[in-house]
Amino acid sequence: MSLAAAPTPSVRVRAPGKVNLSLHVGPLDDDGYHPLVSVFQAVSLAEEVTATQVGDGAGISLTVDGPQADRVPLDATNLAWRAAELLARHVGLAPDVALHLAKGVPVAGGMAGGSADAAATLVACDALWGTGLSRQDLVALGGELGSDVPFALHGHTAVGTGRGHLLTPAMTRGEFHWAFAAQDEGLSTPAVYGRFDELVAAGRLAPTAEVDADTALMQALRAGDPTALGAALHNDLQAAALDLRPELERTLEIARNGGALGAMVSGSGPTVAALARSRQHALAIAATWTAEDAADSVWCTTAPAAGARVL
Ligand SMILES: C[C@](O)(CO)[C@H](O)COP(=O)(O)OP(=O)(O)OC[C@H]1O[C@@H](n2ccc(N)nc2=O)[C@H](O)[C@@H]1O
Ligand SMILES: Nc1ncnc2c1ncn2[C@@H]1O[C@H](COP(=O)(O)OP(=O)(O)OP(=O)(O)O)[C@@H](O)[C@H]1O
Image (cartoon, rainbow, N blue to C red; front, side, top):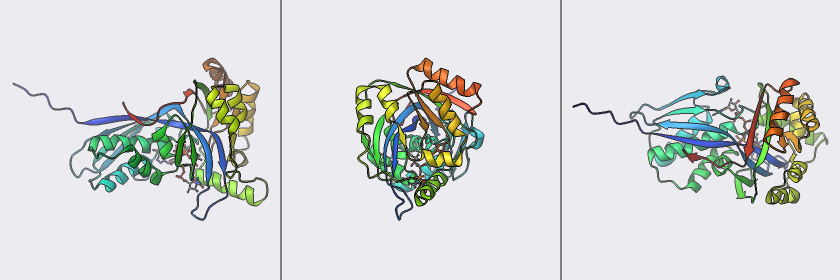
């Protein structure tokens, strides 16, 4: 009689990328971060992380696939690797796990793909290792890894304050359609915040996170009104991203000429986000970007989407 080998335990988790519907940035704090008031929305472009059990002492290993996998580090600097290490240290376990990332969010595009990997890894390793931590514990660990990680755990739509890591859920109705124009050459988040500081110092920009922001935007979300939402989109980092990449003006212009309800740089860029009337409209905007050679890749998706969850 032959016995079938028991399957190796593994857990697969999906976590979403995001778009900042509004991003108000305050003046640089002594801790090196800017206070934010931001409305985050999770999109259906997502990362999937599979965590597979390995033998004691094997350590962490990492593989990646997806259209931009060659741009992702495979060592201990990867946010997924750091998430597994942090969780293991927190619960007093050895960090033994094989991680596989299937990347569905543009890399270094201001859509928090690395943060989604970190969030998914926390949830996957937590389940694999049976740590018994609460979701709140994972959110706190996520905040140590990066300001965007708590939102990738949370998903849906939420207002972020502090570094962007303190979240309050926002009420929304319906589904929104987005088109994204991504560039092969990413922008570094610290570099964009740095240029924001230079523009503020030169008197060309005013920090706005003190503002009690976004009444019109919150109303548009509650009403499920894409036209009103498009008119209320706002990104304080856009001027800095455009200063570093002036050619993105054209990408924005093409979306506006194509009838986008709103168009802006996504987060720290260089991805440009366009809010569309429908899925067909999003596809048409994306097709125009491609035809006009205004993007290296185009991505269409709906929002909001759920936070990190086991599949
Ligand atoms: C641009 C956004 O994506 C908008 O949601 C985020 O603010 C960036 O979040 P993130 O990539 O998770 O950034 P972190 O890893 O926390 O920080 C990277 C760097 O970005 C800058 N940073 C980030 C968040 C923040 N509130 N103020 C900052 O100035 C700091 O220079 C920091 O060293
Ligand atoms: N798991 C990961 N996936 C992608 N990049 C990663 C990862 N871990 C570390 N990195 C490094 O981080 C950089 C930014 O990656 P990411 O795709 O998260 O950018 P982003 O979407 O602009 O982030 P954010 O919107 O949170 O500022 C990459 O260029 C890469 O060098």
